[in-house]
Length: 202
Image 1 (tube, rainbow, N blue to C red):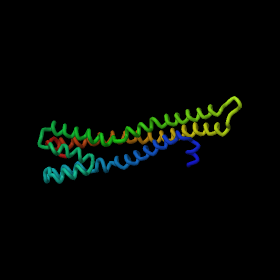
Image 2 (cartoon, helix red, strand yellow):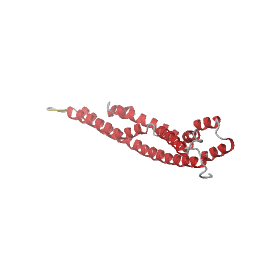
Image 3 (cartoon, helix red, strand yellow):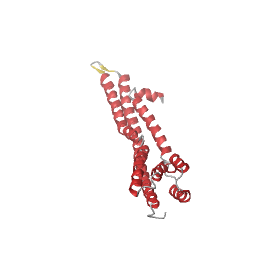
Image 4 (cartoon, rainbow, N blue to C red):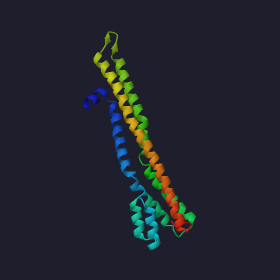
């Protein structure tokens, strides 16, 4: 591995740093964006049942706020459950925007890494070509310097693409997953508003 890094030259370190950051983001988002952690199954039913039996209690609000992203959205609505439908819905929308921002965390960085990794590879390629041309002189070329320049150019191009492909795949995957989660949370929040104001039973 160290032989490859040495052959790829100093530009490869930019790509290595980008790959480490991308792996960290992918791991963190895989853990954070689990459906069970964001939208626990059956949470709406549990909230409605507890509300009908005991009303809104501080214990219930604290538990929901610490439970999940969906729970935080429900808390925003339950705080205004005695208010009009419009006020309750507006409170839920404000909380929903904050939750969506949390779900989107680090995705821009991952998308940026996917976009710039090929450019970092291209930068390494240019550095390699400069070394190749620098090895040429009127009396002939230096074969060792020529070979090193070629390896720098090729390794950086390959590693740049290698980092970009999975980064883009996971970026698209997380973006689609967040969008689906936001839609699901909106639907459940609307159900809560309608149940609270007697517009539907469950």
